[in-house]
Image (cartoon, rainbow, N blue to C red; front, side, top):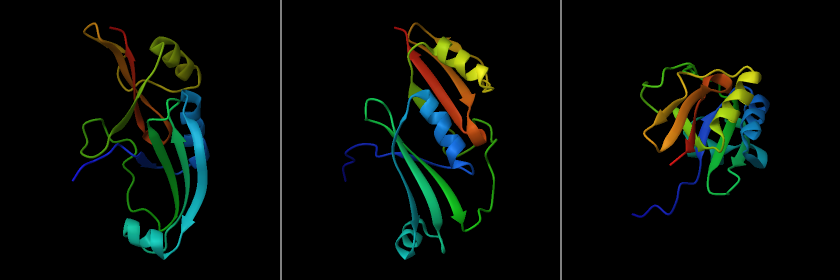
Length: 145
């Protein structure tokens, strides 16, 4: 078995437009948007009666992709959107940025808050977590060394 590359990370959201706008404002590019439904998708995800809309976004370098999905049906059974960073499961998506101070200032101006603090790791990185739409934790990292 050999993995060729990371294809994408999928995030389920309630407000697809707001989540898409947030990630586009960070610099991701919309690659495509579509709706999915039918027995083929039911079989893939192991749910019955799936009807969903998807936005696929990519990083400017084309190497990373983020799939945002809004399920219209079936109804979900839980909401872990504000789970803390140490909760089991996928907790955050990380992006490399230039000028993290400027990015954070721009996000704060739009009402986005840091989860913790902007910190420097050795002489290598400046890092922080922000909580994006629907509680999605987004790590921002600027390589400084």
